[in-house]
Length: 346
Ligand code: G3P
Ligand code: MG
Image (cartoon, rainbow, N blue to C red; front, side):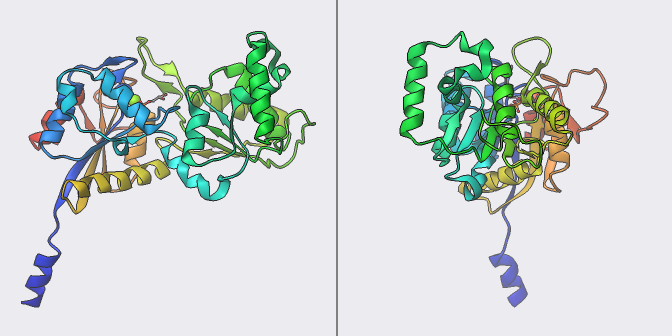
């Protein structure tokens, strides 16, 4: 009897859950991919927990949620109940760095609102590369010509008022650089000068920590073929550092396909699932368009994960699967995936 009671008490109520990549699965640039809105509504109606896992970023989770909703925008999209808790950006797991770098002076690379995002996360001394550049425009002469004097004066004032004259302890690359050449120069200056650009280079051990949020060399945007992403900046940094220093650049990578990102996502999904009344997540379908990011990440993330590859983004080969990173399931698009999931055909 007692073992029967035990079984009843601990009866599990598991579920299947979904992690959606965004670019190349739900949208391309500012256009939605056919069937994306309906697919999310169907999942919601079937009470299947889902979240978004993108290597995009540069804005807060709440802003990205709103941007996605605007693109999926239709009368119907209003039916989808989303909160920023559903949105995992490339830099969302970087909040864990607060333990180490909370009050450190950090250089933030990345367009849009990257520096603001870092400060919102709690990195109180995060300095945007643009503000730093305005403080010393001659650091990159080619970009200096484009800056207005009034903007420079305002940045210098803020910089001095906030007493940010100590060395940088870390560099966070949180999105694709706004000005590739300028940001490459400033990033190398910080890394090679022990955090004090303008002082001589020290070609020895790397003192400044470097963190990058997104390793994607390619991603799928509005253009017909894939475009270079933050991964191109990483390749350049590694190559220039090696050329200058004859050593490998030390860096910590976040984003897909990194394990740390999938552990973070699993915890988020468990929380979303528990709010829907499930007490565990049995399987997570990770749906993506980029074999090197989405498929590789899910394939290496542990037994809960199953990779699903769509043909609406980076992967466009007529072959039945990707050769280097074969997915567990290959479908045409998000629509076919949801059909199969709901009809238990996966
Ligand atoms: O810059 C974003 C891009 O690298 C990938 O976005 O949504 O396909 O992970 P996503
Ligand atoms: Mg994608």
